[in-house]
Image (cartoon, rainbow, N blue to C red; front, side, top):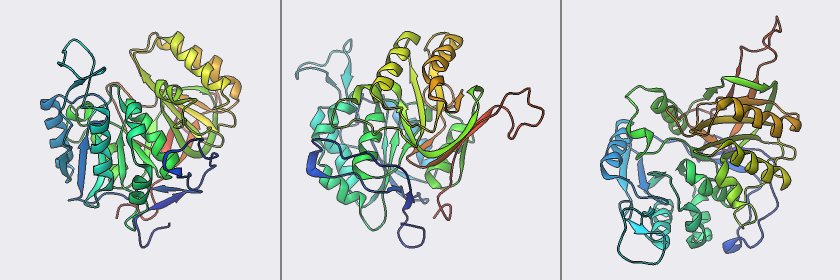
Length: 362
């Protein structure tokens, strides 16, 4: 819907065929509806669909959300801790989740379906979001997304890529990829770039993320897709697989992955045909992923043959700067031409810009 009654926006873009075995029988919408922007005083529910939140960090992140004028409440199981395997005594030296799979799913579904909640904010990433997907009632989630007030916001990053992909495909809504309350959001200073960009993404306004390096020049437009590379590849072959990137601008980032592993994941996506027809690629932060020069060589070798613009160094993902992106929203990627060009069309090196919703904040 366009601006004027409900607070949802339409973002045109190519749609994939329905996923086989989609729970609840829901099919992707023909158009992706942009989430409704927030207003001061709106309630946001903070949940933990992956790893458990550290209480002090979570409280600092909640304070940051409240400083934005939001009424932040915490999900029932956000501070729970269970082992990965069968129930038993919790081991601090083992990987832990924020409650059982059904409990984490229940927190997510309850928040999304609660008409008093305008945004569902994930406390942190880690691991566990893919295990939640089979426990969700997609018909109930879809009915909540179709409410007259317009789609609410799902916000998070890293492991939350699994939820972004599933919600975008199955519910036909845009989602918000950015810093989380028990992560960097708890550390950013008031007025810092992380919080400023988050405010623009959630409340309304254009979002522009500058790049630092052009690996292949050009200009591209299309709906934004992607997220954390390892999660996108983990979903291939499942009922929650990301739709092909044809006609879309792809955003990719990751953390603590060696260059050879990044190369292998890119090859997997290429061999699966996922990149076929992509309009362009924006590469975010690759925190603790090895030699940056080796990474650039990998990206140029694997993605350069696509013949599309490649912009690296976009400050989103993991790392010290985590700006916010609206996945599914209309995006423009500009990777400047050769800096030796005496009359470049745009300043070197370029940027990824997401359009503001019509009418701005509401």
